[in-house]
Amino acid sequence: MQLGIGLWCLQSTATAPRHFTAAYQDLVLDAQLAEEVGLHSLWLSEHHGYHDGYCPSLLPPAAAVLQATHTLEVGTGVLLLPLHNPRRVAEAARYLGECFDDRFHLGMGMGYRPSEFAAKGRDMADRVKLMNSGLDTVVEYAASDSRDHLWVGVTSEVAARRAGRRGLGLFISGAFSRSVVEGLVAAHRSAWEDAGCPGGTRPRVGLLRNLWIADGEADRRRALDWVRSSYLVYAGLGWGADDTGVDFVTGIEASMDEVEASATVGTAEEVAAELLDYDVDLVVCRIGYDQPPRSALVEVIERLGRELAPLVDR
Amino acid sequence: MRLALDLRDTSATSGDDALLTRAVEADGLGLWGVVIGGPPGVECLRAARVARETSDVGLVVWIDGTAEHPHTIAEELSVLDHLSARRVTAVIDGPLAVRDVVSQLLAGYVVDGGVLTPPPAQTAMTVWSSSAVAVADLTGDLEVDRTVIDGYRDAGTTHLLVSWTGPLLPLARHLATRAVGPDFPQLVADMADRLP
Image (cartoon, rainbow over all chains, first blue to last red; front, side, top):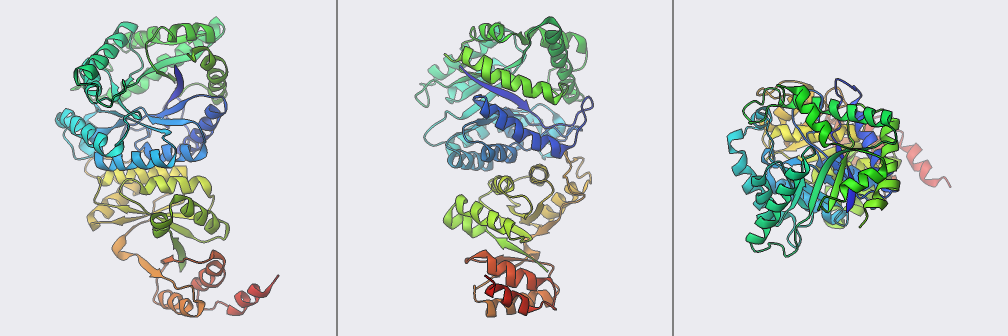
């Protein structure tokens, strides 16, 4: 099992304001540290037009990180494909793959905020059509000989099947119960087999997980509070997006409870034991919360690489 | 007048390693800028790589304005401005309307209900239309190239994007200096060539 870290969103949030330039400069430092401690990858995340500057353009920072590192892999978790020209995305992905020895991973998702579609002159009602045609374009132009570095971010079995029948990797969102994760993986694999095993090699499964290494109860509680508060960002993103079928705002405490319940927080041994129960190839440890002080972020990156990664390296 | 070294052909003909080497040299010699382009979607990625390898030189990013929504182009440029710590100038190759929208978003205006976040690090990024940019192929023959530089400078050109295939020191010493104003003391550059 490979171990990565995410999601770097490069925001300046209401809970932790900072200068955007500092966020982008720190990204490179965080990546270099992740490489130094032996982690597999770092993953970025995208939204558009949000007040906190949530990163709207993932490929330039990916290029900067790849240029500043030697072995670390970098992924988009995820790029919202219907909001982009897929041919242009494919060209960019191919460029990064060729320049950096296939260290770049293109994870793609669909998006759910109407304002983001409107700003790009697109109708959100077309998003499934745009996603499907976009994936086909990317598969055609981005990676003629391999689909190993193409992933689809999913929150539903329909989306998991979309990835599987194209032979693309599965990138599972971060706050699902084990049973939901298992259902998504099964849907992905059966769709791949039903489609005649496109690509030839069974596509990989990546699991985003709210996660922190904590030794004592006080550290554990502090980490869980950071996980809970991170949900505020998502509640804010969902504000006004009430035609998505997802209720981000009503009952926010209940949603925070769910996120907390699905989080993996404990000693390295405890976390490893839980992760190894998942039949996945990659775990992206979601540690890019806005509340932890920088010292805590640096410490957890070091511990993930030096303590947890060897325990899950099977 | 300020000179930017046009590296669009360098990456196309010699690859990105040559581009990076040339940009680092330009950075060390204090040239005002380097011009970076590429296939649609690659322009800002190349510029991000150059930004990592340099510290001061301006990044003039030549972008195809027809291949993506103007809002997306503005987002890329804004992010690149943070990655490079305020060094980006944009050239939009395409309809003037695209340049105008990109420029307005980067300046902080709401366009068609859309707002650009994060804002660029600069107060307002300079965004040129490719049709309004002065571009010159220099020859490497300083006698000839001085005339070219003088012509653009005296016509009131503010920024000139120049191609130059030889060593960069003569460009920096003889032509970037000369471009500044009409009273350049050529004697200083000539004597500098003779110093050990």
